[in-house]
Image (cartoon, rainbow, N blue to C red; front, side, top):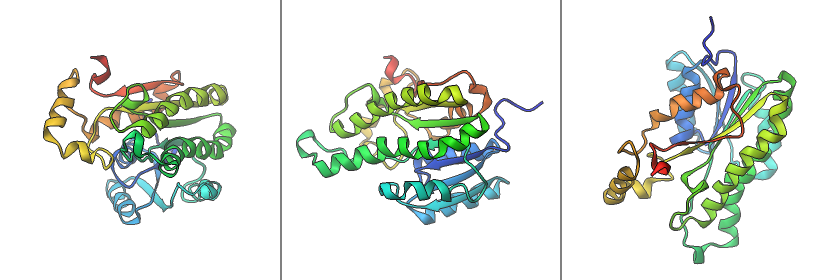
Length: 253
């Protein structure tokens, strides 16, 4: 009997796969049997992750591209289907957090944040949805944040984008789930990634954040494996439009 967590035969696309959350999710999907296309800007890191996946008998390919260029989205959506066929699972993990005080935010920095964190997930998904609908099956997994529902210092633009992602996820579900495409979001707590590097360089702050969780520690990248696989697999067939906090109970306290 095939496991409800088995992704054999599915094709996944993970954006922001050069490092951090996106890279870890790529590894998790490959371990579950999916063929994974890694998308990001840093070719060397992407290629290294592909080698790691293939060394563990997985299937992977990469595309180095800049999602900030909206004009490229349609071409990117075509290119990612070339290695393994049409995309079944999309994870929108690419993002930016400039950590600017409200008075320092410019129109340029605001647009950069909202474009990559909120605009790209919608328009990239919309490019890929028709092929999912043709199969009457698909998964879209967005990356939300603690700032989807809470305010943090120097986070006006980032928080606005992640609050938007929470609502976008619900809107995607309303639009597409009746055609077989489940749309959910993962809202991570504090994990060691490039975006959280300033936090991890401050041991006092890091300790306070760990104490804020119910579990008593901050996240480790392997904590992403279970929820990523679950939301990508048939195990989550009746879950859509949800934002699931992967935060050790941070938002419970």
